[in-house]
Length: 96
Image 1 (cartoon, rainbow, N blue to C red):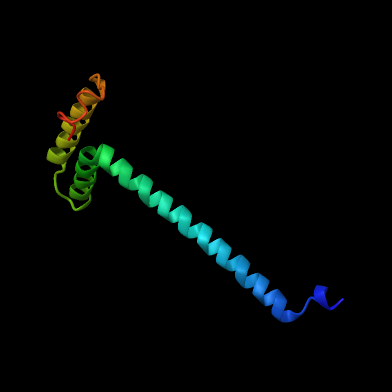
Image 2 (image 1 turned 45 degrees about the vertical axis):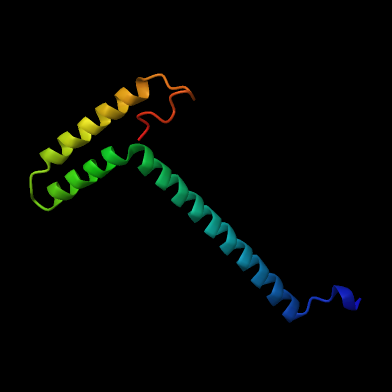
């Protein structure tokens, strides 16, 4: 019967292990969110940067129309590049 005792120290150890497991899961989720956001910024970087810059200009009381126009230009360029047919043969050309 001593093997199945429910001593306070055993309960504390179990609680600490469960708390550590929750923290590990939280760290993994935060890391995944960071990786995904880096990927999104890499894919849509120009558009997002110009949109954020335009919002910052507008919020500070300045005219942000230049940045908003640049965001539209970057979005149009991304749309044009997305419409082109890509194969592994031409992967390295104009892929930046």
